Image (cartoon, rainbow, N blue to C red; front, top):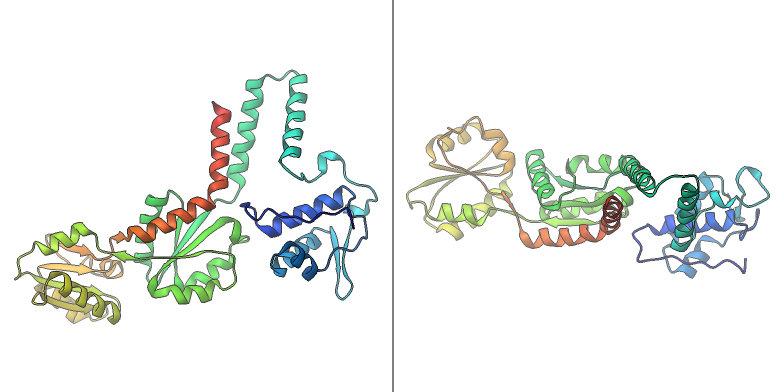
Length: 344
């Protein structure tokens, strides 16, 4: 197999196993790798390409499913020409090796259309139609935001969609594993799993070895709301309501640090029904987490001020997420610009 040159573009947006799979398909289809010829071993090829051997194994498994190689345990992997053919495919059926091949093929197709009497505007219209059909058929990239309570997950997902201009799916942490199992190729469509610091270790264990980025967002109260609270009379009675004792401890300390040790503050968990109703009735201002807001919305009189303590995403963590997503979306942006140029 001396004529075979093994190479991958590690800067490409295309997953390495897909690049390797297409490279092998090209070599088989063009006859560079002969029918029945033995392919390099998984570890040998991984070392040559300086990649994880699981990447090579995944490419080989995909090729085996498509009937392009035969994997014999203990003997190795061998090339198979499609349908038992003894000759390479026609050029129209070949996998393309690089961008030069693609440009050449496109030029030939366009010239053929011109010779058939089609005008340039008609060809542009046809190409736009093809791109539109491909776009509609292709899985759309998205993000998962996962939290332990659905109201907060939905609220943050909505904020992220406004900021990132991409679909964000709210998922409970308890349902994350099942959600990931539903995605056929998460490395292609799932740009990131995003969570809060409270659930980072748990989410890491669930995602495990999947090729998916994990990002942490910090939720906090907006500076505008802090200013409104700071301007209140010192005799204002505040009530803080949430789902778990840890958050009560955290926010009780935070509120006293920001507003003063002598503030009139009562706290309650949403499950403490009698205490909850009592402090809602006695307080002048209510502060609550999204999970608590979903429970108390019918209990709080309309005229009583209510503050969501998680109404803002920390700008620094948001910026880091935006940068990561922009890099991953680079290929899609290029395609959008190309389509825009076609219509001009």
